[in-house]
Length: 140
Length: 219
Image (cartoon, rainbow over the protein chains, first blue to last red):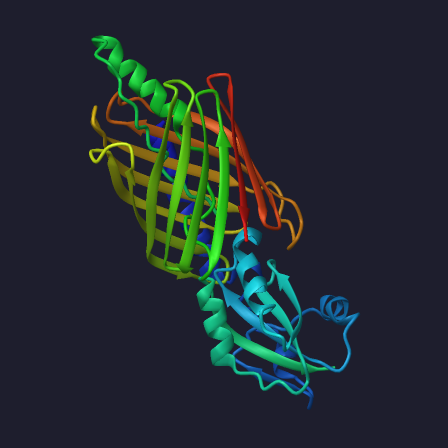
């Protein structure tokens, strides 16, 4: 049984390593939309675009805000992503937070006057044990 | 998670001399009091966790606090129904290394604990886990020193999520745990299921026809 367990673990680790190299979960596809941003959109290191339908759902009850879409590494489970949301909501400038586990992205709606500091955002994610690797800002 | 972590439930009991049965009962107790998978031993900076677990032999309440995402400190109150004992264990966990990718997370923890019952009961060890949204695996190697006996516990866990839920959904993990200690050197393997939504997590398993339930809240 011990050998079976070890073999299973080796298999799963090797499988996911291959997935990571090949860009599993759509990661690494470098959808060109992220580079075709409009004038009210800025991009810094974000590797994929956010689906328009999901973005519309998130912003359905928002107006006159700027949305920061953050790429996150290590956000693999709901239970461990909770801290991000909790810490972000301690900032009065944050109007709404959305999490997409499937895309590994977090949406943060800030008041329009807020100056977005990505280093500060990275520190917030790091305090929860994840890494923010890039972002897009959209204004609505 | 998952965030799964197995934190040692220390067995702090004074077992009278019982010849050959001593080790057998002691080993059985270890398994009966042994833990189901817990959530991560550290949470976000400033995060707190409350846990309750119960099985046929004991129940316990645990609180731990993470000053940073790197370490946590906590205490566990144990009601040992088998030996009618009550005691407190103090624990600490340190995140030695973490590697995040877009689809996975790997962690290495150092863990240690002491019991307030005697100054001869303490434990230390290493724990590692690797997970994606679909798969989970972990190991732990814990050295335990008690007044009665010193021993080592080895443990492996494998898990799979039958579906990939979205944020705020109910998430499900089907898990398998294999555990062995140096007292009886036999692997015990048993399944359990883990469900979580929001800040709440529950694990339910069955060992030797007895339920083992573990409930966790984070805030």
